[in-house]
Every structure is written in C-alpha cells, then in structure tokens.
Amino acid sequence: MEIKRVHALVFSGAGTTTAVARRFCESFAKASNQLGMPVEVEVDDITPAASAVPAIGANELVVVAVPSYGGRVPAPVASRLSKLGHVGTPAIMLVTYGNRAVDDTFIELADTLESKGMVPVGGAAVVAHHSLMTNVAQGRPDQDDLSVVDELARQVSSKLAHAACARDARLGSVPGGRPYREFGGVPFKPRTDEELCVRCGTCVVQCPVCAIDAEDPTKTDADACISCMRCIDVCPRGAREIGGGLALGAARKAFAVKCAKRQKSYLL
Ligand SMILES: Cc1cc2nc3c(=O)[nH]c(=O)nc-3n(C[C@H](O)[C@H](O)[C@H](O)COP(=O)(O)O)c2cc1C
Image (cartoon, rainbow, N blue to C red; front, side):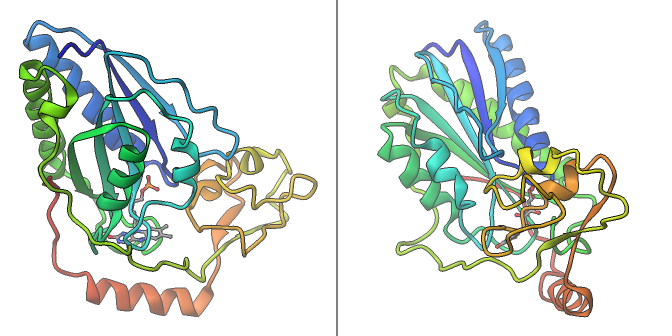
C-alpha cells in the first residue's frame, strides 16, 4: 500500500517520547526513500489540553507515541484520539517506559486505535530515562534502544510496501491483558517557587489536564494533576519542581533498587 505521509501524534511530559517519535519518523522516511516511496513527515504534539488533533488523511501512517504511566496509556490520550477516524489507517504504537514495565499500555492503546477503525501494524517499547524516578535509566534511550526504533521503521516500511491494505500488515498479537492494570496516579505533584515564577502562563497552556490555575499559576490542583512533568519541563524560569521531599527521596531509592536490572527496548 502507498504511504505518502508519516504522521506522529505525541503525548510527552518530559520530552523523551517526542524525541523517540521523531527518530522513528526520520528512520521511516529514510527507509521509504530507499524503497523508492518518499514520504512527508508531520509530528504533532497532543499533550496540552487544548491540542487540536489533526484530521488523518488517506495514505497516512499514524504513529501514536506515549509514555507508559503505571503500565497504562496516560489518561488524557484516549480523549485526544477520540476524534481520529480514518477507517483502515495503519498505526504504529511507540511506548516509552522508565525501565520498570509497560504492563497493559500496548493493549489499551491498540484497543483505542481499533475502536477508531485504525489498524495497529507495528510497535516498540523503548526504555527511556524515568521522568519521575530520575535516578533510574539515566542516559536512555541509548544507541541500543534507538536501533530498535530504526529496525521498527525498516520492518514496517517494507511490510507496508508489500501489503495491499493495512489489514494485511496487522500485528499478530499485542501484549497486555484486560481488565487493564489499575493506576490511580502518584502522590508526588509539582510545586512552584513563587519568587522565580513570573506568572507567564506557559505551564497553564501546556498542562494536559488544566490543573494549573490560569489566574494564579503558582496554584496546582493536585487531584487533577497527573504528575507528567510537563509544567516543569516547559517553565522558562525553572520555577517548578516536583514536590515530595523525603518521601520522594525514599521512593526514588527504593525504585532504583527494584528497577536496577537493565530492561531492553523491544519490537512487538
Ligand atoms: C506518573 C508516571 C508514571 C510512570 N509509570 C511508569 C511505569 O509504570 N513503568 C515504567 O517503566 N515507567 C514509568 N514511568 C516513566 C515514563 O514512562 C518514562 O520516563 C517516559 O519515558 C517519560 O516520557 P516523557 O519524557 O515523554 O514524558 C512513569 C512516569 C510518570 C511521570
């Protein structure tokens, strides 16, 4: 089947998933070029609550890239994808994770895509620096991890080139189970240094769940916040950091012990 555009929709709190999605798109474009089928590349950030999810056209390969949170797809993603609707579009699932596990992330994502008529044709789990337990998986993704992303691009470009339609290239099985693992979030929430904050509102606009008060951005609704780290990542003044003090320090130590073994990135 002919692919004219590879179109990534990326949810990313701390930016690693965006980098991995870009890498996939570049590798896919290169591999397709080598097969004599040049493609355009578009990468759309669907993290902010007000993200306008673009229409998916014919002859597109959609790449949905998300971090695993508690072994699940980040909660806001399902509603972002609810507007997708080009039946029969092939889709890639790219999941980053912080060296623990992805649990049910792929099956949840596949269920969401299939409910929109899309066809999962490939995917990869990519180990990345843990955005919350920051002492875990430092320096990941590394060359070995990125070579898995490149291999996915090569395999999928070749598979689609030889397929009559996306269904011919459908993934055989998707890891994970139903009902999905329960995840109620983490108790660590960002806080603001009121001296440094200039109330520019960048964090308000970038927050995926509208948890930051537009009138007073130093206030965060802890119940709404999903601890994605986006506000910390985008703050131009470095005025936000994750709270948690001693409890966070203890959690990080325990997590580093539990997740000390190097996990691999892998293809589905
Ligand atoms: C709230 C939260 C929950 C997470 N849960 C998991 C998890 O269950 N398993 C895991 O291996 N990594 C987990 N991580 C780590 C992220 O999946 C990983 O750091 C990811 O690369 C972050 O992507 P980003 O930089 O695009 O935000 C979690 C991170 C956060 C912030």
